Length: 268
Image (cartoon, rainbow, N blue to C red; front, side, top):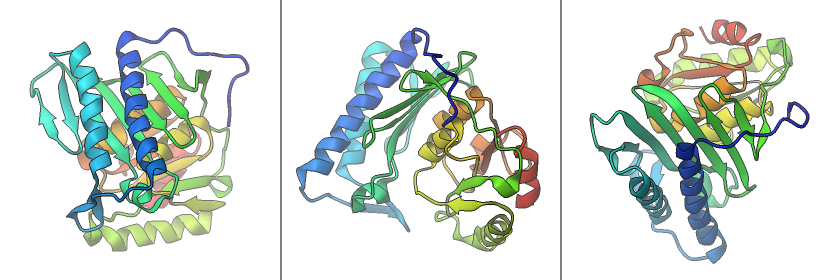
């Protein structure tokens, strides 16, 4: 990880404090369920896309905490959808990113909470309850991992890069395109990793564990928090054309500034 020595987080914005409290509450729900050994009520929303009672309980806990603090704010949440349409401030929530991992006991999942004000990213929290790692950012104030400043890696060449990805499991019609992208990047990087939680993958780009990341067919709650983490750590985020339409299209690329053009070229 690439931290600037002894650079710690300033006092948090009140809204970010609420987001952190909500994320930790959701994480505690996951940890209790993971350690409890009880059976999960797993339901399929669509092919290869699942929801459990833990997803729902975590989301309800997040929304309850936020609503008590900010009753006029809106929500865009994975399980309950949109509420408070037209609100200036909207909380974009994935209560359990990596549900399939969680179901199988594969320890790579997280809580993702992004706050958008008048359509622009304002605050972000990604919380990994397994490792107790808290990634936070506020627009213009930098990004932090457990209160220490994060920077993207210093990787300069795509051939030296470790790149994260995710399979387009919701859009199997694009699998041929993705396969071509994957083959090209496997030939031109030092390695590819697919861990199964996009919000954590983006957080890992922000702290330098990954040098770049791309995925297609994501939802806003998969990206809203992680993208701001990358940007506030000095990285670049765009869609497959390098433009800013990633939140609408669901196609996202993130990388260090030096790698970003090469990543886009490799994906074309």
